[in-house]
Amino acid sequence: MVLGVIGHPVSHSLSPVMHSAAAKSLGLDLTYDTYDVPPDELEDLMDRFRNGDMDGLNVTVPHKVAVMEYMNELMDNAEKVGAVNTICRKGDKLIGANTDVYGFITSVEKNAGEIAARGRILVYGAGGAARAVCHAFADRNVERLLIANRTRHKAEALADSLTGVGCAIDVLDYESNNLVDSVRSADIIVNTTSVGMESVSEKFLPGSENIHQGQLVVDIVYRPLETPLLRQAKRAGAMTLDGLWMLIHQGARSFTLWTGAEFPVELARVSLLKALNED
Ligand code: NAP
Image (cartoon, rainbow, N blue to C red):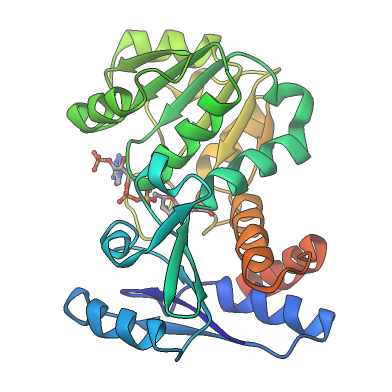
């Protein structure tokens, strides 16, 4: 099989590391490469894919929404989230899936199942990843979802898109006393913004100094693996979960959709940690 990930830029992607390690350990004959595809070359790439040059693809920034128009079918939350991160090819038909929802909720449930069942969730951010995270929680019928984003109208648009999901949804001002109160009273706090990434100057989220013991704090950023938010949360005695787990579980679901094989999760984590250390 010829598999890979398309994005622009994409050379930093860790997906080849885990998919290649998984295929090797299972004795599967497949390659997994990166394809740097500027937006004006997306159509050509999709034509090549449909004509058999590749068998399956992951999709990353900036193509997760743009690829949707080339899909013959959508599955696995793609329609609900409005984004595709995995494409399977059956003959000349392309089937788009969103495995980020599965990846996120599986990472939380496998590592912190007892906390995942609780009710009050604070999500920082309103980009593509936030959409998947909010849908994942909404599917679990949590009690209340609070969304805080630097650009408020994007949080409002995300909240609107979740109308009817069965849990209460509130938008919070990014720098406000309400946000501080919500940090204190949340059961789970999730950062889906780029804050804390090595390449971003902001390192701290407003209100995060109020994190305390008994909470679960998840950062989906994984470069660095221990973000300033996770370090802060650990110091406060909260339980923490790093973003590599979401990456692994979304990849696991993609791998199974393409190959039918079960993904070796622990081996993937070891290979990713090694790659991050060598960076
Ligand atoms: P996106 O759609 O571009 O959204 C970026 C989000 O970050 C927006 O909410 C944006 O706020 C916020 N943001 C960016 N810079 C900020 C700053 N300096 N201060 C405050 N907020 C800021 O990106 P995405 O696809 O959602 O990805 C977001 C992060 O999640 C990235 O770090 C990505 O690597 C990570 N991620 C991880 C996984 C995983 O598997 N672990 C999966 C997907 C994404 P505004 O709306 O105000 O611009």
